[in-house]
Length: 233
Image 1 (cartoon, rainbow, N blue to C red):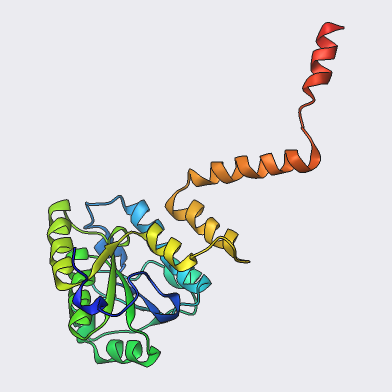
Image 2 (tube, one colour):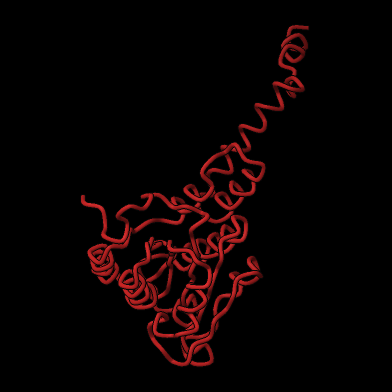
């Protein structure tokens, strides 16, 4: 596969020092239209991105399409878990990139890598992705933190944004690329986001590991030799 035009001369992985998180139109009304991913899963992934962007200190911008209309308000988790995220209202534009205040805020960061998620995928995520690519940005489209009215619509959209030069990616991969290494003081904070919102079964692995470490340090909790001696006695 050839390198997308916007990636020429740029690192193919996410550079946290060059990245901006854009969470677009994750609104309670629009969530009612989502059919290609379970709503609680979508909501969890969006929450994970909000937590991740705060933990990694990524500039984060949110916006909503007519939140006082049928599309409804942004889900509250985003700004609850990332109070530093900046909400940028718009005046009816369907494509967030058509809002001059939105583009200006992104330009002021001086960063050129955009991590974009939005509901609905075909519109709220795709339109600003294509516009940002045309403006010379490097774009990662976070598919499983975007929801759509059908799988077919999502498949078509993925083909469209990929052909335009975006790279489709999932929430776990975004977290792992931004985290970069387990050899960091906040590694377990990243792990908590994984287990709380993306891969809950990973919690069982961590619990088993913690117990094994405890056995190495403190010895076995269950004294099998005492039980065996008692049964023989």
